[in-house]
Image (cartoon, rainbow, N blue to C red):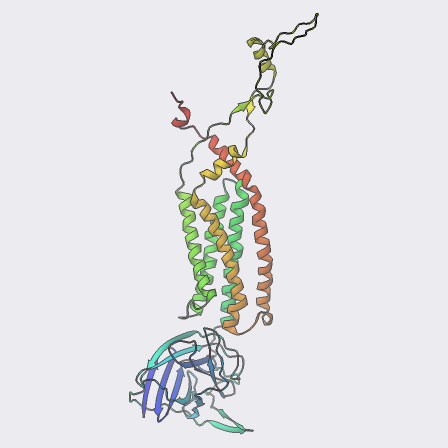
Amino acid sequence: MQTVTNIHQNLCVNAVMNGNSVTYQLVSQFAIGQLGWMAVGFGTHMPNSPMVITWPNADGTITISQREATEHVMPTVIANPTDIATLAAENTILSANSTTIAFTYPLPNTAQNAVPMIWAYSTSKPSSSAVDAQLVQHDKMGTATMDLTQSVSALSTGRGATTTVIGTSTQTIIPLPTGASSDGNSSEGASRPDPEKKIRTHGVLMTVGFLVCLPIGIFIARFSRTIPFLKDKWFTAHWFVQFVVSAPIILSGWVIAYNFVGADHFQDNHRRVGLVLLILYLFQMALGVIIHFFKPKRKPLPPLETWNAHEPEISIALQAMSEPEHTSSSVRQTYPPALPSPETTALMNESGPAPVSKRPTAGDTILPAIKARPIQNYAHALLGLSIIALAFYNVHEGYGHEWYLVFGSHIDEVPFLRHIRAWWIAMIIIIPLVYISGLSLLPRQWRQETNARRTLPPTQNLRSKPA
């Protein structure tokens, strides 16, 4: 008799080789009321590795479910497995502080001193005792290499199991631990984490952080900087919302998801995009700090030229005119007409309107502001919009795809997901419309920035005249 033990913090896998078969004994540190399911698979990674997933039920029965997956999704039942796993009732023990389930399985075709395996467990109960029950994603997972050539002690055995023949099938019931209630929970009442509640919290925090707080900060920058009594306060409100309010929300939601998946990080688009969003958000905060504290010195602009209100907007050059051939005998005109004297001109200027500012064009009011803005400012704005767009995509991936992969339930089956979807549809319409309406304030913003530069003291170069 030969056996080997591979120990994890909450899961121990023992194996005994008997001829052409191996008895595997999975020992969990969770009692029947705390354990959801535990599993081993035969291979080096989850995709395409045959798995034996097992869990205890409240009535003392044990479910052995043989499954497989083509990727990192909930595995499905193998209809006709080549190798069949059979419950080893004599080595299955349900105690008050641990759960031990054993099964026999054909001897692997690999080297017996290095059998590659994967393992996983969850503290969330499957949806039923059926072999095709919905499973909640594992709390922890990993890989192991088992050596079946080592000789150690025999597997532990439990109290006598009861086997009942029902029709053409048999049902084996393992004795429940003393003090266990009818639902399989220990009378000590240890609490079990609720994975759905964790993921709901994660979804709410990330949605609020990326699609409520960040857009509000963007709208503050877009709308308030052109309002006279707010234009000197908009930046304080902008960074307060984007960093002080948003950062704790976003980081908390991200950490919840990171801890939830255990070692199985970044295995699909939703998780990878979540990492990208966090990196982009932190980079955006750093870029905002650089833009604010390392501003290029503003260059003053010369004042606009002046024009007289009596003069036409379009000047017409006077041409010399010759005296006409025929003139009246009583009235004779001279050509060109005599110009008014300087004294008369002075009187006209005193009595008429004074010269006023030249009517500004877009080249006078808008282009200077556009050209003077550093490239990092435009990058900051474009990156902010890109983060919002990517967040819309990832929220959709979360409620539309990731939830099903983790919990096996569709949108229409979960009211929480339907509410998130309705909110998402409303926001993907409202947020772009509000931002586009704010773009109408850009000309006013550019004019204000240009006028502010015209009030700056002129530099020496601007005051100096060419020789």
